[in-house]
Length: 534
Image 1: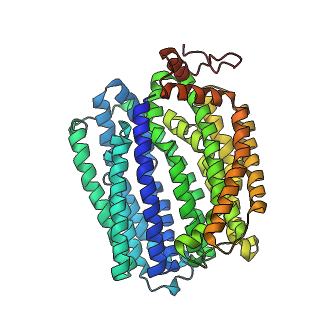
Image 2: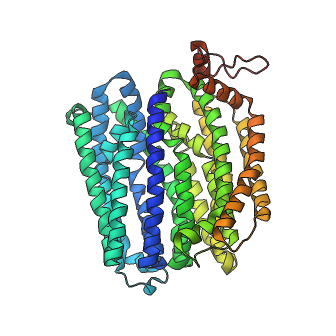
Image 3: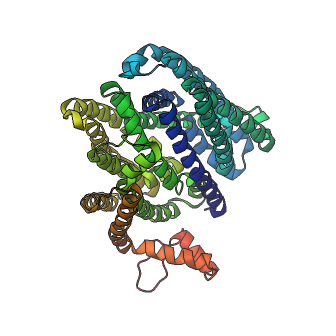
């Protein structure tokens, strides 16, 4: 596996993520302070609606980027160029579809934004500005994906991150000077247009031969791409119906005021998930290349290691999140914005359960096995919508939001955590999945138990900072227990850590490095993970 590219991609993403998390939280505080929490909720609604419309993207990016891995490894520039040309055409169509769908949806905005009358905002103008910013982003998506396919994710991360930093600065200035939601959205358009310009310049200089080549995709390759696009389209629908429709349901049934408070909590947890997810997502193209070059045995060994890391990181971060989230919301966004503790509990549990899919999703997309569970997202999305609407109606008023989130938890446990690993193990690793099921649900139960223990261990103080510090420390202390258990259950994990440390310290010889890559354990008394790749 190309560790150098992987490390560069991860390091770049982490550095910028820290800056962007701080800036996004600052921008949200300025929104609440200068134009109100209701506008904050309305902005969250717009984002969710446009995420739903982005289903038109059909998963084209992931599908074609995956198809590029093999010709790039083989040095087949003609095929890469042909795939890129197809990519450009598809995204032009996608931009048009999103524009038309967004305009058609505008008459329904008053019904989706309950209690919108409490704010003096032109729904149609502001939504239209948000729509324009999304459509512009599709004009350079093809070039961004081309750059990523060559494992240069750090380039697109830098461009997008610097553009977002500029956007945040402009938006803060606009809020202070104009106190206008319209001006706030215009700043978003300016930022994305600049990202488009910079991406165009870099892509044409670096990959001009690919971009300018006039190649057509052969019939067999086009068939493969079409198959992958259809599969990713299904996944796109499921992801949207589960992760974005929740906000729309809350807005339509409960109101934009509650959505504003809810979005403060999810903004922090989403930032956290984005941060810890950086240990995984930048490796997608690297793993894709490794799978093509080394096969399923090497991929399986890396997967087991990443999955345990997945649990360790998730346990520490999400216990910490639950312990301090109420204090963070008060400190970052102001008072009177806290949600009931039952809501923050289910938010924490839901995001942990979703996060435990990171490793499976990463290796599924990198190995191209997303085709085999293409119908799963449809059932996932339909079940989630049905349960969300049912629960928001039948749950007591004070637990409406809890009902919506519980629907997502049930959907994920009954469908996602069963189908996704089954497909990955069967079609990528060529192995039985039963052992994964046992350990995965054991980990989820263990996390739930320690989350409950944390809930009853938390302390209350008048000083917000003292309460945050004490409860955060309690969360870290409690997290040690499940983490130690997970490490003791996975001897292979301990082996990998030992070898990686030995390698980084310069004590590992060539044979050790080769064994680690092949997943071969040579320690006395330990079980061999796998034989060297035949």
